[in-house]
Image (cartoon, rainbow, N blue to C red; front, side, top):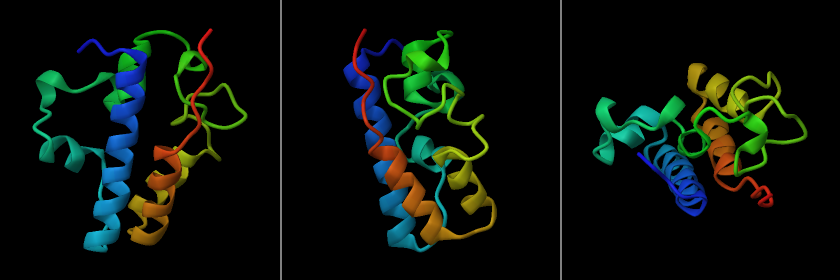
Length: 115
């Protein structure tokens, strides 16, 4: 799957807003797999690292991600204090309110300026 920067950001926001909205609606933790399944995305067309931003950057350093994941250059999933890690912990602990909160934060991360 080849994405433009704009498509990657749009798909990133759509996915995370869907996760937040469905979590709030169903009052249970939703995850990326449920988004992919509900949108017809299969193993064959799954984005790199299950992330549209990672699909866009491919093997570029995480500092090239089109959204800003805080003050760190670590990958979002590698930052032990980052939004993604807090989201996954909430899902693991079955805390749908916290899960939805962090999914919404992730959906609205600011864009990195193009270089």
